[in-house]
Length: 178
Image 1 (cartoon, rainbow, N blue to C red):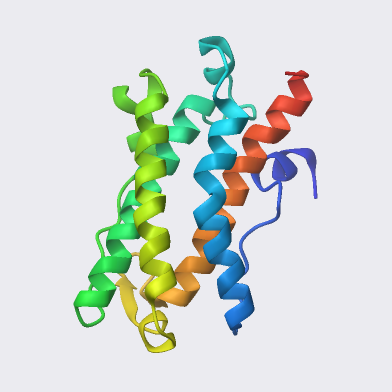
Image 2: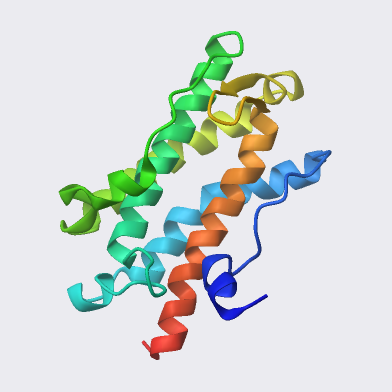
């Protein structure tokens, strides 16, 4: 893997497992549950200059990453609730790169986003821990990809998403000696 790909995908690209065991699902839930604490501990004392540093050339700043995580995870939590209450609902995709350019993502302090992540993950964790195998097999339809995703697949993806962006920030911290 070249340096740019390593910076883009520090833990590797997401590969959807064919089968997700109960143990793997439990591990994914643990990642989702613990993520807000880990993220806050990593960035809570960063200066504006550090937060406005891109994790790679041409990439988002740490501030944008944290706001992206809040946006993305709220959308995912909503998709879970839709799939649990409707029959294979078609979700609404969004332009995450354009969202990251908006003022609330690009310029404001990260504390509101960290609070959103904490609250979303608290609720999401309770929901995930309550689901039966049958409920984890419920689906939503992603119209851009023309794929039906199970909630089990989505939980695995979002555990990866937590670790993926955490690694972006952690690697930047190490690279800069912060």
